[in-house]
Image (cartoon, rainbow, N blue to C red; front, side):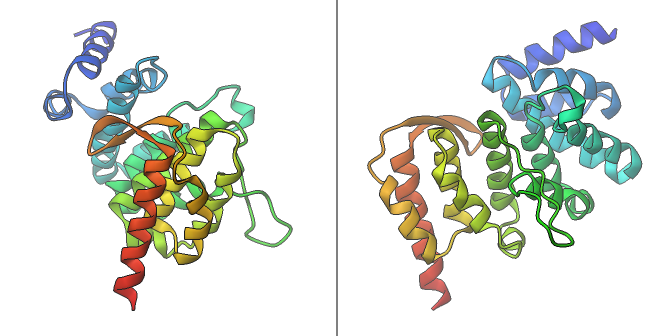
Length: 240
């Protein structure tokens, strides 16, 4: 199969099939052959294609890391470069794909998680305060999707990072999808102190799309706020 044929086949697969079948098909190909078509798929106008591409990265790059760690690092650096102003690119899907990869690779998580977190932080004057704050709301959504996905996979590890304050700052955003995603993350990472910040959003009827249990679902900022408050309350009860 030529590269063009592989790209066409993969895009159709991502658009038309569910994840179990997609994973079965891509398992028959060498990982490096899938990389470029998947990078292209991250920029697709169909949200389903983008989401499935993200999930595929979470399969193939951890597999690469087990066999050739440096090859996997090259992929991660490609994502980082795409989010760099000097790259001239936009970086669509990069935070989500990095997060999905880190969900399934402890070694890459240990090496690159701090970089994903840095996209929520400004540069500081002190040593080790190296922020790479992303200002574009569309990419902020990606960062928060990535943080939330990692919280789903490795919640205790993410709680240890003490990033609830970084996430809560996005509640001030004028982009309601950014706000909703921040609330979703705080449901998994926030403390009782964050409940007061979330409470004003209960009743907010702004509709957003969110992948829940691998299915694209419509929800509202208010519904996410209610769910987040429930989760924070449960954690508080357990800790007492």
